[in-house]
Length: 156
Image (tube, rainbow, N blue to C red; front, side):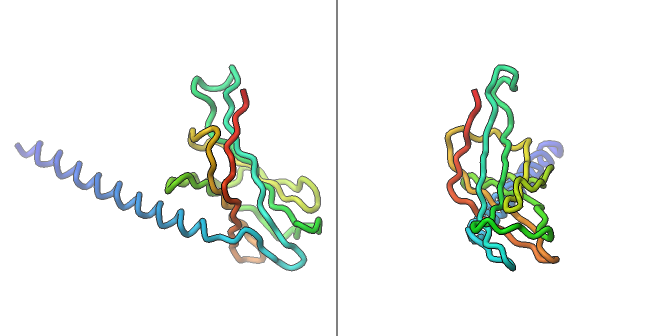
């Protein structure tokens, strides 16, 4: 009897924790979606472009690879991006679910495009739209920039 009470209590607590996480994800998703789509910093006016995909080629996992994403933080006037801008995190938002990842690689594609890469995401899509937020640091301050309704592609 004691074992059954413990099991019921454990399941109840687990349910409460799950509810709290869902609320936190919903709140964070809303906060992230309020990020601006352009940011002006110094001589730079920045926008975010993305390419998200899952690999379904024969060498991929049975039901496709996890989500991968390339983000380009781009100056709209082709001005050189300040070397003081450092890419930190990416958030991909699907409904109220959020995939958060630190950039594993960051390079200057050109002097006016700073590119970041992440992989190992969830198996969402393909052919669905998500919102993407890039978090970066500039002179000790953290900024977030949003790219709305980005399509998850597939490679076959």
